[in-house]
Image (cartoon, rainbow, N blue to C red; front, side, top):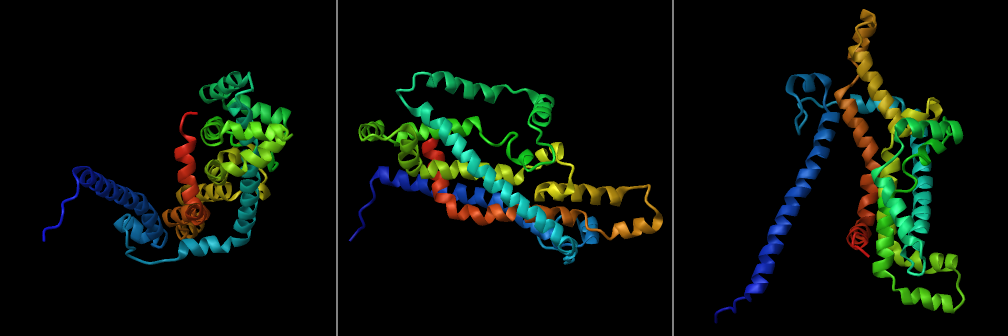
Length: 304
């Protein structure tokens, strides 16, 4: 007996699904390739890199870059601990402030909400600039050489995150639930803590990941506001280390004996080892929150 042919609509859907799956697979491979290239370079010798360039399989294997990093493990460990503290504290603060700001903007009975929404959007297009920000944070808030220099400037609350959370509140939490809670005697803070936040796990996960990545990768605040080496985060320390290696290797003022010693320092391989060390925590966390992240991005981006 002949098999019944699928309906044209089903065939078109299957064809689209196969094409989309193929394109996504190719895109995933395209995104993964640089990571494997970085790993290969970090495991290569400097001579092999100089003679053969970048290759996916090292011509000469070496752990010199990681040995160099291991020799500074105590300093790097302290920097990692500070980075974790900054990331956790900054992410929690970002989630609280973002959701607290987004909640009244989503309330239909809050009359000035359009004004505050415009105020939030205005900050996306205009800012005071780096010089003005530096003066404000150092002269008025006195955050220089404090841990607050990593948490407060630039990343504590983002306008786009506020709008995303507001859209999620509008699109996914019926206003009737809020009205019912008000009738039962709940105040705004109770509604926010017991209804809005628990029902907003996907968008909170999305905003939290964005904030965590921003704090983890942030080295500019450390360059601007931190000069105490004991307050270096991992990104600031590794940036300083990379710059120091490059300077020592290229310095023409170094003595001949010192210059020979500097030549043994890993440069290209160390840079890639630095990059791998910096991105490992994000790679380990992302798979556990991928589902909520995608859901929050899709639903939170819908106009409410």
